[in-house]
Amino acid sequence: MPAELSFSLQQARRLALVAQGFSGRQPPAAVKAAHLNRLMERLGLVQIDSVNALVRSHYLPLFSRLGSYSADLLDQAAWSQGRQRTLFEYWGHEASLLPLSMYPLLRWRMQRAAQGEGIYQQLARFGREQQDTIRRVLVAVQERGALGAGSLSTRQERAGPWWDWSAEKKALEWLFSAGEVTVAGRRGFERLYDLPERVIPEPILRQPLLDEASAQRGLLLHAAQALGVATEKDLRDYFRLSLVECRNGLAELVEEGALERCQVQGWKQQAYCLPSPKVPRKVAASALLSPFDSLIWERSRTERLFDFRYRLEIYTPAHKRVYGYYVLPFLHHERIAARVDLRAERAAGRLAVHAVHEEPQGLDDEGMQALALNLRQLADWLGLTQIQLNCPRASAARLRVALAQGRV
Image 1 (tube, rainbow, N blue to C red):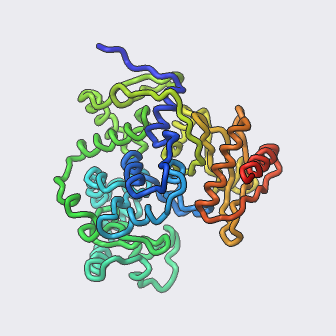
Image 2: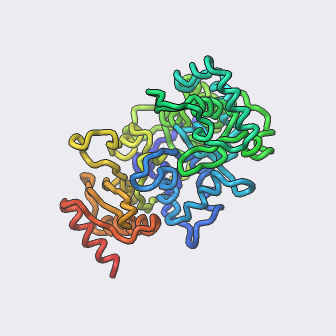
Image 3: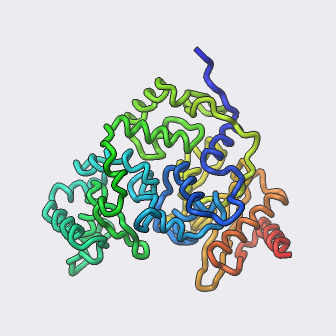
């Protein structure tokens, strides 16, 4: 029996970074739809979140990897009609945009949701108790086409807790989870729902229904490809699989030779990787990372891989925050070297830097220049003409110099 593969922590980082699309090489010219689609196939999904302190979270991971690109490219891939649509919305890792090729791998989750499994308990209860409302809303979508919850609501007063959703909104969310409607587009950030057959390409819908075990193995394999090297917990978290689903699928993938067991220096847990992975000699990428980036969204993995403890402090009272309201980790080469608290002040045309916190190893002059370059690129991409430093720390003084040098 061959010996298990063994990687140093540095090698594991390189495998993870390259698997996540951080090759250090951005498209030499304008980013095109083909670049975006290749990256999405590699990642498998991007997480959607409503926080808009800087930019909606699903746009930022693509910028971190591709550089400046037109947000219209992602909008067209996700919400246009016809051949330009290459993505769909569903529950992948939380609410997500996923390549259409992933749709067959998630139909089992839709079937479970229709049975009240794997969804919020309140939504499952609504599905059991409010079938008349659900049928009425489905008929409205069938007859009228893409609809938002606001155009269906008959509520005259506030309904109290549960995000203050109307009955029609709850019905649409239940139908969406069950796969009976899907997201056709968005009006602002409001979802517009339509029937899958009017949104998802027919060849995708015609594919045979996979049994749950086969679909879950497919998701695990996608996760392994996207993570490079990963523990069982890392793999199941990527698409939110259960412990039992993950263990059974992992054992079968190893038995089939699709995955290999391996060891990573300093990790107590068993790790897994694709067969005979090629470890790059170095990774030279620099990028500001969304708090919802798939490189860092599993916080225990981030600590194991980068020795970097990260928590989003949006919901922490201001006086208890350690680093700031909306803090982006700064990836430089093969480590996370700093944290930067950023805000887009759109009315003033400013990118506001509220804090810069270097990690213990700090940033050398080249690293600070790289951070300044990333901030300038981010401001340009967001259409902001100024970068304002609002932090008195020594790091900010060095960053101010680096920004000034970049303008020469």
